Image (cartoon, rainbow, N blue to C red; front, side):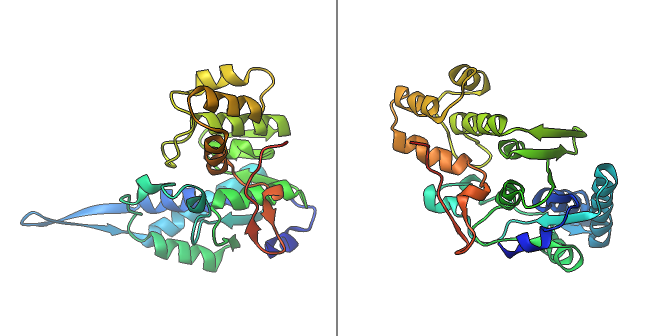
Length: 252
């Protein structure tokens, strides 16, 4: 991931979740048109979507006091589909807003962006932040980013979180147990937030996660599969030299 070289200075770089904020800008500028005779169509005011996105980026820069940004984008195949073929299979019929691809292309031409085949935007932000080559802050409303140590700014709540290593691991184990219906992996059957918290207690560990799966009639292998889907990549999960994912393994 050669983008690391461009981050080697003392200024804080904002790692911005481009997937979310490009989607929001485009979706907000999508309109229905009634042509009469029961004929309808959709259109997008792309110029307005560009303005909306640019305004959002400027807002982040002003709030967080940094003009250094990197827009992180999902592109290409997702490595999790090799772990669980049905990963995000529930999204196949969900369309992107009209003009979304054009807005992404415009973003690439006008902002510093980074994407990496097989990785999601979340993974890129997680890898870069945990590489610790310089000060960074992730900007995203995605709860999954709570599994990454470091600074996380959540615009919808207007809050800056400083997530410690143990806290990040706790959130990761929670996701392993609960799964995520939005992303199409089930986690451990019949476990929600309260039950997951009860299982992990004050000393969360992956062994507690594995035991919960076994108690539910599943196997450690099942637990590992679900955990690999839940895992937002960190620097330790990335082979930078060969640009390949190192699938997560529980500590022995």
